[in-house]
Amino acid sequence: MKDLKKCKYITVHASGGLEMLRAVKRKVKSVNQNIKILGVTVLTSLNNRSLKEIGYTDNVDKIVLKQANLIVKSGCDGVVCSAKEAKLLRKKYKNLFIVTPGIRFLGDNLDDQARVVTPYEALKKNRVNAIVMGRSLVNGNIKNNIKKLADHLNQWSKM
Image (cartoon, rainbow, N blue to C red):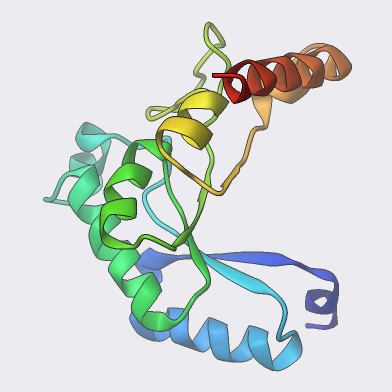
């Protein structure tokens, strides 16, 4: 638990339920009051078909909304969800802190990801607070990829 003193964020899966979310919040905040606890909703590698395969009967949007409700009710500090659902969450929770994985440059390989957007779409169109961008940055020349990201973000900041 002492390692939590160095962390700024910790994620916990909302599918663990309300009591688990509350228990994680109590324990983590007892060690580090400043850490932000983010509830993870539906993974960006899943789509409606794959959710049905693992036993869910609702679609992605409904599940993300239900899980976000639990996350907010638990007192966690924010949500991790696809940018595709962020716009939906913004309608209900204007000030919710939203982190979005599944970020790719146009033309990049999607790999196992099902619900992806570009950095521009996530930040500007869907109004997320932060993005998580892995493979599009680390595959190939990292320095060139970071420049590509900076150019991409500068492009839309002028719009």
